[in-house]
Length: 83
Image 1 (cartoon, rainbow, N blue to C red):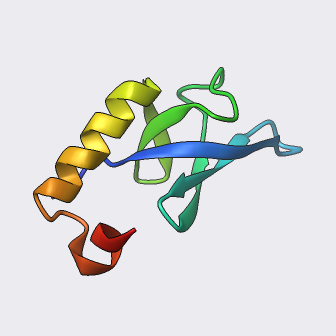
Image 2: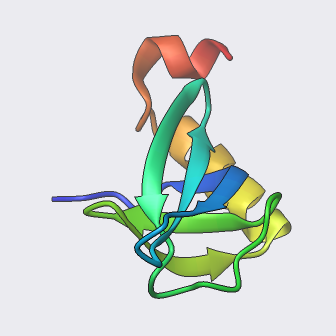
Image 3: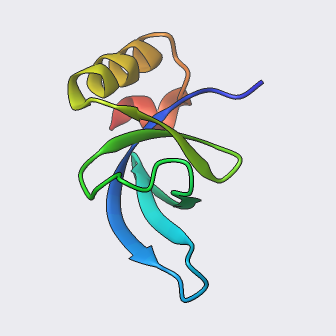
């Protein structure tokens, strides 16, 4: 089972082969994802990532509600709940 955790894009770059990628912050973790399905995403946007691909754009208000609900239900465990 995978959870759709919202992440915030902090950096975007284009590879020489034409691929577009982003660094995405999930709390204190930074992951790299491909933006092939959503090439118009920008730094500061929130997205849901699965299997290394950004799949859905999510507005900031919805991202915050989702993250708070996940914290309330203990999805992140003790370390994330403290932050």
